[in-house]
Image (cartoon, rainbow, N blue to C red):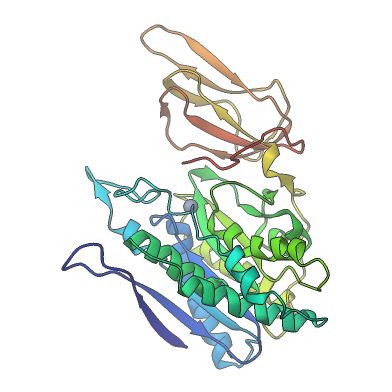
Length: 372
Ligand SMILES: [Zn+2]
């Protein structure tokens, strides 16, 4: 195993942060897996899974069972980790810019297209190598003017030439669920099975360029631009929501780390026989079909339905209670689907999203991800 340190652009004199990456396995096989944890900084489930993944990968490396380079960044957001305000941790947004750490990754598709124009051929693997090299080269020269931009560039450059990218997050209160590009579903489905995902949300354009989409979208965009040449969907990139922020235990983390290793074995990145794939708990659904129920008033939320329950359109999901007026506002679902995430906060302000239901029928348009 190699340890590499990637210094970020210093935002102020006397301050320096760095990203630490661990590198396992051979670098000469032309295959790579990239895994990072806690892009929203205080996502402890991913930090613990990364801890156990490091142990498993170290063992697999020593045993010579890795058929690909595996890069692990167990703590991928040192900026967010240092952000405390009024004794509370702020990990989702950079305090200086108010930008979400998982948005606005560089778009270098035009640069990559210009670099590969006239060089593609009939060999799909050779085209993939060309694109990966062009991607990394474009990101390396992408202008960086802030510590946050430097973090985005560092993480994206580490991931850009990988075949598989797993971005480990968690939700507020939630069941295991995944986000991925729609064209990738057949290669994401085994991961959903091994992890026991209660929902997989698929989309080709989520909005605001989150990390997983930045890694995978280049490939289908280049396919459209260079339709005469064979170009693979070269990066299976998945946002893995490791349940809720308080779902932290060694038992869960070791199970999740084992599931990720099982997936990588099943996909041929690790030698050996993959464990039998469990049944898929829920078929993938469109991100545009995921209903985020908002509280139209402020008050105390009393959930009427539990995570994992199948909700029907018209079902009451929660009450919002105002103790001054005595008013009880009933919040109802407008779609059928699985209740896969809830806000852990029980006091809500007007307009706050309180829970999410994975419906099968797309009905939303525009930016499909919340700013939060
Ligand atoms: Zn997150």
